Image: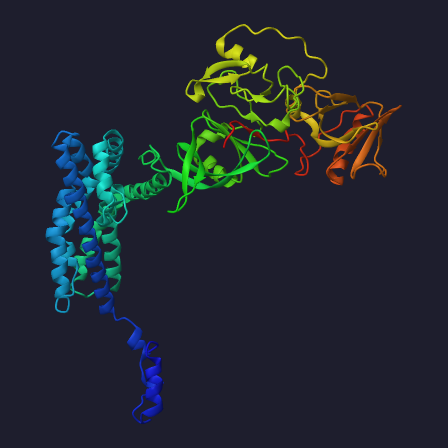
Length: 584
């Protein structure tokens, strides 16, 4: 009616009223509602339609892929048994469906008016379900062989790629087509269930259809695990293509878990770069996007094995919710992937030993595990000789073994590192001594200022960035820290990872003033004793009050308590994130 509404309106306008049926006279429900017989016919027709498509796929596997590969194998290019083991009994399955089941369904649909039945035909299928059990059992082995010989034999790979490029393949891979038999039996079960729901209990076909369903359902149950694997394999194939046919992706042992965009924080500065991650049960793929007209594509930059991986929470001034993924091959600092890691943490015991604090590479793991790189802006001096950095004569370098930021003199050593495929890398003098076994020259005893900020930060009463001004000098940002072991001393560092403090302030006896002065920054306070005045400014009034609460106790000679953590501060944590490898 909707398509010919204009005709109906003209008819109403010019025809005799006595001849025009009233709207109430038209039984719309009987026109648009399918009868039960029509529904049964529709299900039977769906079975025939899908069976035709299925036989086409079987023929492609048997008469094209298998036949072409066997033809080449008979020339001695690769073993005949390889082809036989890949395609298993696909020829027998193809013969049954193309020469028996499909012709029977074609004939039955041609005489449906007189013989509306399916159960008797599908009963013929049940003795042949054993063929599917054999195919499903061999499926994992077939996928492994297919991957193995695609990598090993150029001729094997060329034949498959040539067939896959043909229109008959529908732009799908051989692996996709080989999934069809695995998924076909559950398809029969689904259609039969629907058919029985519509079939009256007293219908002559009910008994045969029910008997067929029971046998097919049992076979489908045995295929469930294979079907789950096939869904995972489909995803692996998709990822394989998106990664430019990255090797060892399509593997039965790989289980896809999660993928998504992420920000990766650079080691040498505070910039963030968009990257993409693929998380599997056994590895994490760190990828960079690449331009493609055919959808999103990526290049694998690093593979990190799940075995021995650690996930560590970090804090960063510029980027919230950062964390560090540390593996033997690489350590990355990332943002906004927390939910996925938490899900995987629940599924895999590997992460249960991960500490929440930032960890350094242990002596036992030195050279075997990629370190976290201390970011350039976290230090102002060489972490070995304590000399201050500058842009000309003393630039920053990273030790590839421990991740420390050192000067060129302290990194003028080279050694092979196991985590980097035993390639020669620059390392600091201490790591060189440990890795080569050479005696390390004993250094001078550390002075009072030569205590690493990071060493204190993990066990501090209070730590974080403050603006600092002494006398008439300009304001500057410093990392302030009151350690638990020296609760009456305030240490001032240039950055959170500096190995030497710029200065210390013994708090006992100092006066604390927090009344605002015109020249001071907002949220400022002062420590004064005799002619010595130290001015500080926090990022907020709340943070200022937290510092004052601790300092006011310390100046009296009492040991202050550690205030509760607050998102607005760097309290009890090293404020600054870690990274390991420079990245383009």
